[in-house]
Image (cartoon, rainbow, N blue to C red):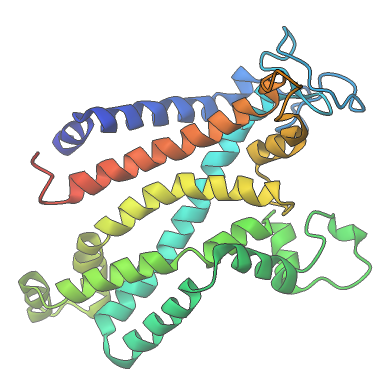
Length: 313
């Protein structure tokens, strides 16, 4: 508790925690803040007009932040999109961190040829752009038509496709997890190699502790500081990436990205008034920037807090 108070004493850290708490509250209270028209079939999109009407309508009593083309209620999508952002960001960053920390810790502790093999493979995967990796997962592994129901296929599904449909996984989510764990492995590997010959590890070995116990009880807890900082920053970053993939046409399920897609034709407004249809793109943009900035502030705060040189400042 004392460490938390010391962390929250810094203005930027307190700001990040306050914003994070407010956004988490919005996500948890989504059913109250934006009730579903049909609770039996919940959706992040709510139609408040005629779908064929492609002109964004300004804020009104029925749609506090206006409507997007197709008369989608922007307020409703922003609120429910917050819940999706937390789930998507924490799932991708958390699983990527878990994979990377496990690979980095084991390879760093074992050393030798295993460490060389795993780290060379990690370096090779790091050279592949994330966008290319996600595209590879969508086209070569999961296959085409991931947004289509399984019954629409007239050919056998691969095991990857069956798993994706069974767990409602998108190619973007799977691809980001599989191609974002490498920095965590690199950071953890370097820390474990520095610590594995420390006195407290030697003492653990001398009393008969096995390799798995040493890793779990002594090395990993002391080596994951840099990975935790990266994890905090990645939660916001992957949500922005998910919206970007949705923007370019990949099925990622990012509701805020969908708002930007349907509203992009109205960004320039009208001649002489570029903000004539500001509600078609500003709310979703602000939500993405705020979500990403909050997690980056939290990551910066953790970095300073865990750094012995600045922890006492």
